Length: 215
Image (cartoon, rainbow, N blue to C red; front, side):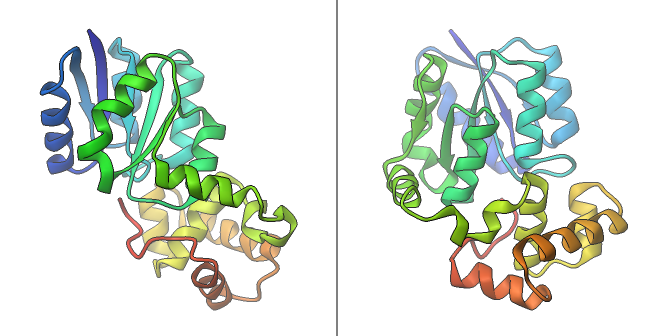
């Protein structure tokens, strides 16, 4: 029996994932969490084979949370389940230790297959995402300033591009507004952009982010 943990801040999403997983043979839902802190507590207290992880939850989230989980539980296989269909998120997730990457729009059709493959030691990525990843390999890294950003800087950039204020970003990431302002300054310097508007235009021009920031 494959033991699966679910981490997502939306109760309806967790209900749907649980229903899909329990309807499959050989899968058991061993625990659920709704934010970064409870996810860390859950993986420490519950033995499991696979964690289905949302990248956008309250508190510590995203790639940073993924790295923390892998540091504590190196053997735990992680399937990222997210609204973000951009290859930059997938690349960063795999580098941080993810074994699979699945968007929520395709979860109902692919979730069981993805969990099973990841649990068996394989890597799972949808065909559409695989094509995007392959295309990104042909893009010169030097021509893409956003690739210079750290994972946390990239997350702040994403939220700035979505129109969030410094205060909103600070609340979402559980840090101070001063810390977010420092990140923003670094982002502008690394990307050689003069102001927030330039960042938004860059994100739109390169089609980096979905319309909705939170997954």
